[in-house]
Image (cartoon, rainbow over all chains, first blue to last red; front, top):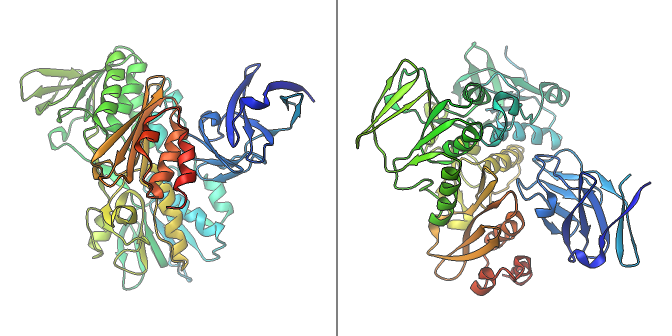
Length: 103
Length: 417
């Protein structure tokens, strides 16, 4: 367990994603339409584009390069060309901050 | 070799054919599936061949769609390299070059396209085209600082290769017959941004150039230009478009119309034969049924599975928005829809030197979008544009024009239209 403060709750728009870099690693942080926060690896498992440049719709983020889609809550790869799931990380909100357990 | 039970036969083991074969199994089809490829490799992704930057060959690994083992595991018989020489429609079987016959219940032609050859270049050793992994290796293994490459054609393949080569320190000259690069399907402003990126990297782009002759020299090839002038290079790469591989279909008497003609369900004129990907032309519902042939990765990726579903008796129509992208240096370009259908352009500043162009019909309908920006920076807005095109939305021009208006919001208001 390694909980790290990543951003403020207001730093991510509703149903959106931002990029968060920490100690040489890149993560994508999501805020769902239900106002929950999620974290995944920042790079698409297909060709390493930053998912933070992608579009979030409901539970799904679509890679900005080649339209691979993932469920950002579970990390599941949903459509070709992606076939490798995305690693997810637990999050929690405390005092207006989003914390990520980067493992 | 003659199989007892006729199954599904797919000719072409590229993105389209491979995805079709995998879809048949995902749909729990239990009969034989045979995937026949012309190349010696297992199915792989082609885009990196011209897009992936990196030091010569080391930068280019085969990006696998499905390995031989993974195909075997799901009961897909990959025959590669193998060549189908005839479709025997009456008997519903294909005949291979080695004499083997394979019976089919349904046949998918995913034969792709072949780079157009330059008659002038016939027989020249140092003149290549780029389509396959082996082509890419043959070209890239020669690229090194100080080497000289002349690229014929300022289209996507040529320009992507120019970017790869110039980054490696190669002296690159691009010869384009038209007045500017990317004349077909890319707006002036975006072509100009790419043109500048190339010249900033030292690539010489010469537009409006007609070649008079190409001759072999001690070191490579000399190109004489009709307007005077000589371009000497160690290697020439020709990127002047591709032709659909229709020979099999044509010899079998299938309807041809700028490619193997299929309907919106990807059926050819023979109900047992389908065609998909680069080799076929199909009607695009979104543009009044206009018949197009697309040489694009996503088209292949989507049509293969759709054809597979219809081979299994489903009744699915292909309704996608045409889409393609190109990566050159750190710039990512995307085009969605048919740009040439539009009469008007609304421009949106995408920040950081990037731009999005919305191509509108006279009645305000969004018909196409094009854009360029660093990396994948335009990806999100571009996806929204594509969804608006699919919905045949008429977004307010002011909202399209203003970077402060989130494009995603337009999706909500367009959802009812």
